[in-house]
Length: 258
Image (cartoon, rainbow, N blue to C red):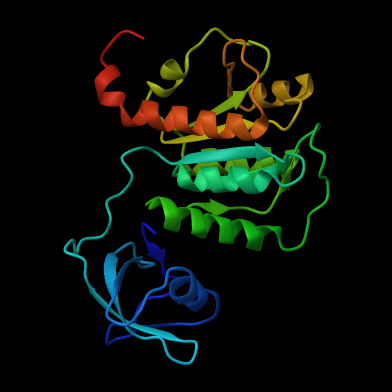
């Protein structure tokens, strides 16, 4: 466990009390006992150590201690990355959500596209995805507070994109497409210093020609990965990782010809 994510701050005396699923995870799964410490990320972004005082009656009582770095965790050095993910078959979305949270994606926006199989909303999916995100961040230590939105239809997706552009005029939209539509590189797209990067990934079968036209009309840039055809869950991870790596290393390549 890289960190435990606490959903509420300690009380005025620095004590926390955890029960239910949190108690089970820390005491039954992680086997924490009185006197041991575990790293904890507070809602404010501050990182502390929590010393376990007791584990009686199904309640873990702990005391927050300075972690040696009293400042808040630093802001991510790259702009937020938003994943517009077309809903795939079966439970693949669970894997995509987990990998996106581990990869420090800021926001996951599921949507139903023309080739998406699931067309109806399933009760409890958002709660499950939020639980997966928390588990993934605790395991990976991601400093980015990933959030997931309720699934949208295609019209709702472009409405949301318009709202994002209104708040962030420097937003960059990229969509994976199986047919080369423009001779441009990912470095070229990212070299202009985007304020936010939105990556759109289709379901099994990709985007239809009509959907590709909608993305282009909305200002998205098309991207094709050579002659390789990726599964949708692989494309989401591949694309987000490539974008984040390029942005993290921008100082080493930005001044060079692309």
